[in-house]
Length: 242
Image (cartoon, rainbow, N blue to C red; front, side, top):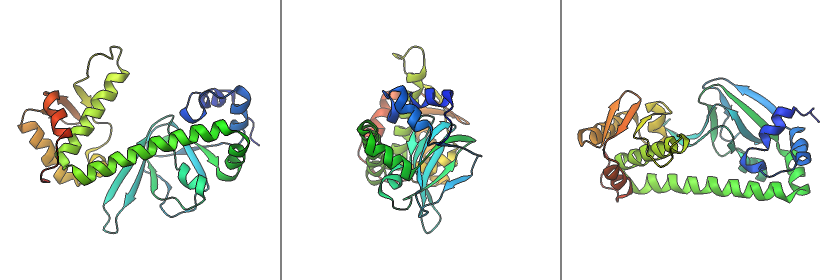
């Protein structure tokens, strides 16, 4: 067992899957974790490799992705501080179903599979919170599949920009006001991979939204000029891809 760092124990109590835990429960968790540091673009694990545990992001961001036989990348999710990922393989013992890499320097908290499973057997609260987390991830993947199946690239881009604006609004002091000037939180190449397209097609989608007066683009800064039209585009039925 590891000696528990009090600061780490305090932090663990703030994340979703361990929220509401008693101090003794968190101290038990703290003794089995393994802090890790990964540099930008480092591969944390590869699809098909043995799933020896799961991770919680302490600092930085991690992308989980798949790569087609032709080399096209599809980002499935981006995890931020407090998020857990790779729990599916940790629970069922099967290999990792996707790959993960650091988008920037990240600090991760790794939970080895066997000792964590033993804690699950001992404490149903952990299992319930893990089920809630798994449900949230499942809903996200359903949304990704829906977008890729039924929406064209401009529609997917519109939805992404709306979500980015909403997230910025939630972080502002006045949550009643929508933030219309946002900064892309990933590169445009990564954004293309998240939206299931290629950079050239994404550029044409940005051009279309700009030329129609819906947004204004200045590098990584995007100004939403017509939120209603952006909302309508994101919700309309797919037409033809660019």
